[in-house]
Image 1 (cartoon, rainbow, N blue to C red):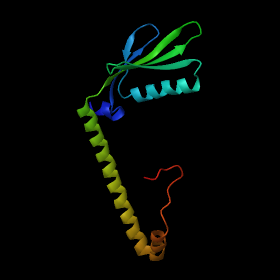
Image 2: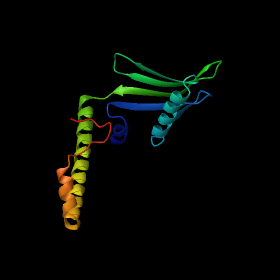
Image 3: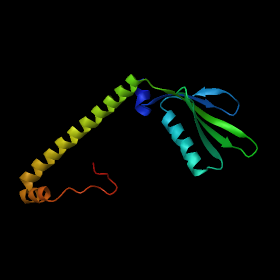
Image 4: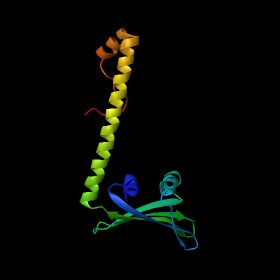
Length: 144
């Protein structure tokens, strides 16, 4: 459940891969992201040949179908069912992701402090110059 939620925190996903012979094959969970990415890329690169249809129902269920246009017929390649997660699952995922980001921030701040200490020892004037200059944000970054 935790692995599945890492990929899709709001929705639980159940995937069936439909072959051209009409057999339903389960996609291994480890392969799911690459299969989904490949299907999405096909829809972007060749929109005339590949379609992605997302249908959402009032019950909270949804379905994403990847369809290939074979000129004379449409073949369903992949169908993903989505079910709405409970509020507790969503809250748990938000807390989990927040804690991960918080620990990454603490790690980066510790690294920065280590670098500052090293620069202070090796080149104190450079540290003073870095501390005086305003912090630049990368292009495209949003200020909060």
